[in-house]
Image (cartoon, rainbow, N blue to C red; front, side, top):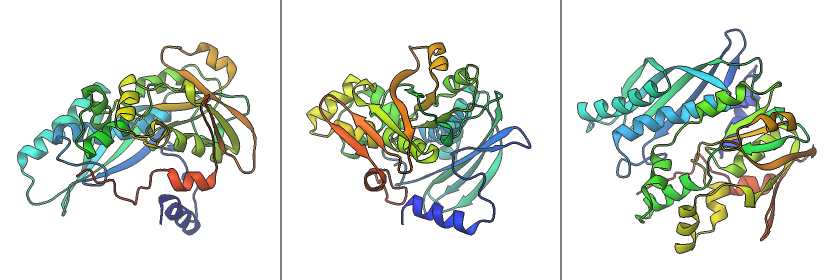
Length: 322
């Protein structure tokens, strides 16, 4: 089964599912956000293509990215670590050196965790953040007429993954976007200080198309994406052309970019720093079967439930690097 099928079973089984649906749960009683992500060896990373130091940084970064999408201030993390017998003290030291470095960058404290044995390396991080605004971000908050904006570039993470998997040469900047992503915490906080209502926002860790479809599905509004306005690094375009890879697969479906994708009203859009947030689309009409319409001068796509199910990243279909 795919992730969505497991989630449906979980929702059907639990008595209260009011906190399930977004990457971060907002606990109104405490004014805080909680998120949790796990990285598994040979599923999410390979120790042939990354270092313990970078792995430590990334394990924290993917959680901070979810807090960024919630417009939260990162505060604390716990780290659960499962290690096979061949891992030594130096591995753990380097892993936690990476954890410590990125935590220091974002003023986050490590407050505990767990260490167990395993047949492969697994690092699981729970992150806690505090509310920074009167308003919050949830996927269901997109409104007709909203402008879809994003940070950064798309396709770089997937391009880096492809290069590592196939032992291909690629610019270090693009490779690092895969092995050492930058969580857009500051951008999320910047946005939290501007909005005057709850908004829809998500990080693009599972792909731009995935992000847009999840917002469309949760808010019951179709979304139009102007593909030609999506920022893509020139090195990624050249790599895709040289290696005969469809660039759309990197940009729309590849994931691992950890950029923010938000839906804001026109007045908020006018206040945004245009060097940080780029307009890439708009929220359309209310729709009982919401889709994402991708438009370009060269092609058009309609991402409906069927295409989404076929193309989006499957967390239960291993992405082994080597």
